[in-house]
Amino acid sequence: MYLTKEEERILDGEFGEGMRKAMELLVAIGDAYDAEKLIPITRAHAASSGQEGDMYFVELLAKGGASCRVPTTTNPVYDMEYFHSIFEISEEEAEVPRRVKKAYKQIDAILSWSCTPYITENIPLYGEHVAFSESSATPYVNSVIGARTNREAAQSALAAGIIGKTPEYGLHFKENRKGTHLVKVEADLKDEFDYTLLGYYVAKQIGYGIPVFTGISKQPSTEQLINLCAMLNTPGAVPMFHIPGFTVEAKTVKDAFQGDVPEDKITVTDDELKRTYEEIRGASGKIDLVMLGCPHYTLKQVEEVARLLRGKKIHRDVSFWVCTSATAKLLAERNGYLSEIERAGGHVVADTCIDEPCWHPYKDKTGATDSPKCAYYRRFKEAVITRLKDCVEAAVKGEWG
Ligand code: F3S
Image (cartoon, rainbow, N blue to C red; front, side, top):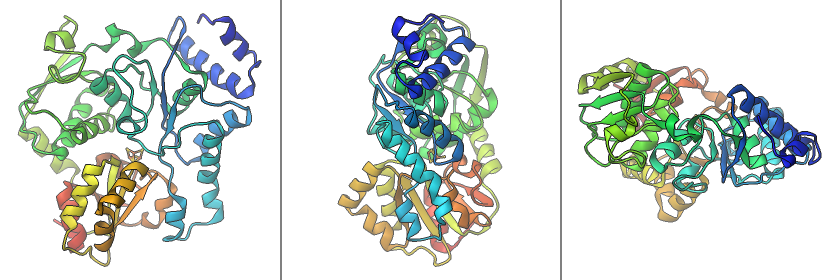
């Protein structure tokens, strides 16, 4: 890969060991993908977590004196103070997230600790070249916004944020952004959970690719799109999609395929969604916890939880958790949603992800969630996956089904 004089000096270590490491990673990726050069990016999102592998890399950069050259947001770790007031968390266990947080601060990242920064703190514009990792973030910024990113790993996105550049390959080129699969949606998509089922089903069918959805007649909401994006990357690996006439890069189906024919076609009817739900919903019975907010709930979703819990009490044997961003939590507090949820016996927690060790008290428990991605991480033993309103009802009754 061609490097400018400055890039070569970075690689030679003239700008410090941290930048050298970041550049080394970008050059290795560029070489692997036959990129000709690095291109400037405007922003990045690093999907690392509060676990040891992530800590190793960010500390390596921090110790080497690196700092972010473009705005770079961070994925959830966990709100240590909140958890320490509820569970026993040993000093040893708290060590990793504490060090992760410290290292990200040292490298001047934006400490968003959220997996949906693209709707709050880190919103690209159409056509921006960026480096975004995280299951819902990559397809959202590519498809809905029309920014350009590859499906980055936490480390490659972070390295790109440090250098302010990324190797030019893949989805940075228009020709690689064309659809691969035509997905004819005949199902009636009524709510956010239907988009979860749609994403999950389509990803299982196509694995890797760029689906082009037709037949989605109503304007999808932000929350529906977030769910679709996240689930396309739960059983599959989908960096972007088109909804002709709605997403920004394709007015028509022909635009979406850039004049080519689809590699494959699938049809999704109500039957496919029903079968997908039957497959994932889990067994009826007692539940120990409800886990919502994977991806992080928006303010609108937190308000919906507060509304569903109004005048009700969560069963004494059920723990009830809503994960959201710090921004949404602050606004939920101002608007009174937080106190409504807490009055009913629930917790709203910012900065936190289901895939963190802080949930260990639930490892032998049965949890209900509206997110197959949340269930996938198996921080609890058995999972029930169903609509938000069913999760709330189950929390109140103490059982599901
Ligand atoms: Fe977000 Fe963690 Fe779920 S990063 S999407 S809450 S697994």
